[in-house]
Length: 454
Image (cartoon, rainbow, N blue to C red; front, top):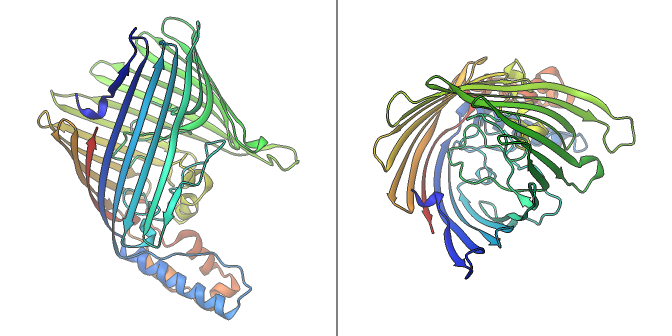
């Protein structure tokens, strides 16, 4: 067993009913990216004409457009420690703290722009899923960021029937491998390679068995604003070897109904999940609350082990939140739900494929292919993982985008009179940023990560 899956027991009471376990790691990630030339040139041209318009008419309201380098690199160092104190086998206290230091060649790479992103304009800001939090930034400079995250602090009490957990805790739903429509709390992006850590949210959760193979989860998700308070309920059961669950939740300004399943169909593992979202409007305004956006997101996939050491997977994802035209991608990728990390992708139809080969007990080779079917475009992600020692892992890989590249000419044709007059040419440039496909606008990337577990 790798050290990543183990905890170190550092204390045990004389009666053996109380224990303290601790885990820690240090990871160093070096990454390099090359942005699409059309996107770099187009955004620079747009930025220049916007600056010209501000000088010509200082009072005119205009959007801010940053800059992108042609090439860039970043070095991120992460240290994490977390532990679990079990008292009399009834009370459990868990805590986790993480520190990240990033040094980048350009300030645009500090906030997560680039490596692994569908396109570099996509938001990477985590959702505010906490009642009380502190400033995560310790030091911020032009090309350096030091931040920390106290992302786990919860107390679990075992009751005669069920258990209750209060505090900052990890909650994760869903059966999908690439996408999890029902998981609004701590989902991974489909392009994430390192999926070891999910960061906690503030919640009170009660779990209780309903039978031998079924249970219920009831949750309260507190927020400072009254209108943003959240609640969730989920019931899971097993019928003839198939895991089934249904859920209902109110999160921020959305009401979400979900369903999941996972089981076997002969030699294949099958899974599916779907979420129906109702976006509420006028919350907290004093006006009558109404339903605005409505959309469905769903995933269905299979896994297959054709031979010892091999694993193949395929998944289809329908994103009802997306748009059918690439001209609308930029707007979707900057929307609140994407920025909060709840929804991934700006299109509607996607597939994900994975091939994994355990070449030796210590070496695993993997290839992921994520496609936007309507562009069409794709992101190819080859990854290799090698356990140099029981507690040292080396992970290396890259990101290769396929698809139509951004159209720089669309942005370069915008003139000062277009900006001042708010013409269709200017509005089209701002809303689309010249994107002609989703993954075709992604940067080329490569990374090397070394992790040491203690």
